[in-house]
Image (cartoon, rainbow, N blue to C red; front, side, top):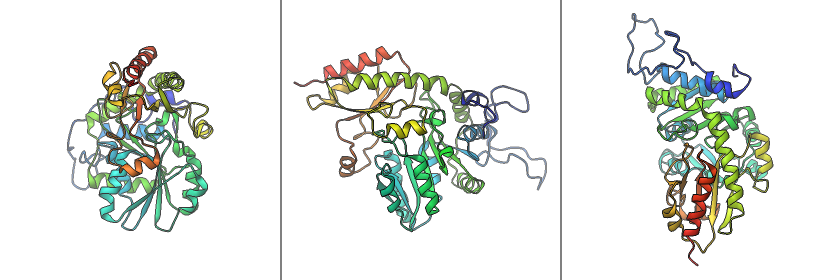
Length: 386
């Protein structure tokens, strides 16, 4: 539980935010690989920086407090965090994943963990009754994203967590799109929360990182063992950058979301746009569910241009909004999921879950919204073919 009544204060003061040795209000970068010990068998607090580092520990305490979990863990990337969580499972286990999850999550299951006979099935986790019937004895976890990457579909996190508890399996939520500022899955019953800290938590496109938060001492011990054994830990300087980014998360997200709502409404009525996916619109799939479990609809939008538009010309015509991988930075970014973030998902699966070749993902930044909309309008106009 947080020591602060409001998350805006916890973002700045949560975790171990003051250096106990000097009183520095920013945790120092402990750029060391090892620590001098006072004697044999005296069990020092710090031994080796793969096992523990004061800067990383401050970040881990902070994210645990923000997500109202038991313990937090920092990794060198979001995929390293997901890999650590999937390493909880054994040969013969199956993990259910949401439709249109991040392509990297699918890839590591399909190309890496499958080699160890840890399997997966892709299910519509928005259909709770159907999901309940999919739980067979070999299923050991349900991994969901809500909103999902990239059609922004909403899954009822509490309902999924209840199903998991009913069957004695784990519920895992990738909370990257929402962050603990907008949504806290552990409070909704989830066992494990994952973040790509590269995105909104870092917020400035200058650090690659991953975070895991768990809801029990038993899971904390298991993830800590995996983290130390496999060694994909976040470096001290990157931990420092992520702490710094988190301090401004609240003010950034407020602006991100304000801009995203305006952009989504504008695209929704644009004559050149076929479909808009944004859970903050009242007619969006899962709008009421999302309203009950999150502060708002977040700042990610996906949309499709109409058939009389050349998508390559659209991307070429953008000036302010950058065509790039990733999301969640202060700058607006677009990507073409079918050839970029979700290219590792086979074509037939992409088509089945709605990841068409014409789909565009927009991470709405904190620039002036009029400039963002003007750039999108110009690119849509320039991409017209008829």
